Image (cartoon, rainbow, N blue to C red; front, side):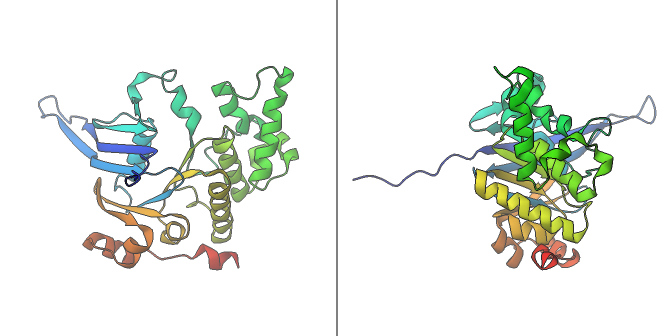
Length: 281
């Protein structure tokens, strides 16, 4: 007789994450002070799931995701990816394994792409940095083929690889940014307000793209968003943050329809809900 099956450990686990910043002294005799951006945050992200992080500006959302990806070092606490400790202070070479399994999409598609580089070079950057796709293939044909393939995946023509960012619309640029973030086939994709700079129609298209990538590749998503409609349509779990702390978390439907924290109720009442599904119709 077999016992109950233990749940799989989370792909991403954070415990006690805290980030404080020193406040510059106004005078030589002033006491040292700190500002707390994140306080004692715990988070589990299951493989293949989609987790939305919501809260007002300054609530600690971006600080949390930067710590999760070792783009910043915590003052206290720990992060594990697939059971392996993440040490943000270890240096680029020591974090090579983490960069291989993660991708990041930033808020502004205009600022996140180097205007001097062709789209093909931009998308291929992670392959070069991680030493992928070129082994035994003269001229990097493997990388070029992968870039063309991933451009197709995000709804762009492979021939666009020779063009430059200024030749594209905002929605197309964000597709390029997503292509760059997934070209090395990461297991986890993190988006820090990846749709806030886009109009409603384009936002719906990007939402459909992310949902498709998740279904096809079992991609795990962590998504920071002000748009409750985006979180509602894409995410299984939601985390609510206020003043650097997680005040509520749980299944998206339960948190959004039956919020327990007073702050969550105020937040949901104050943020306009945009339904991407209706926008796309």
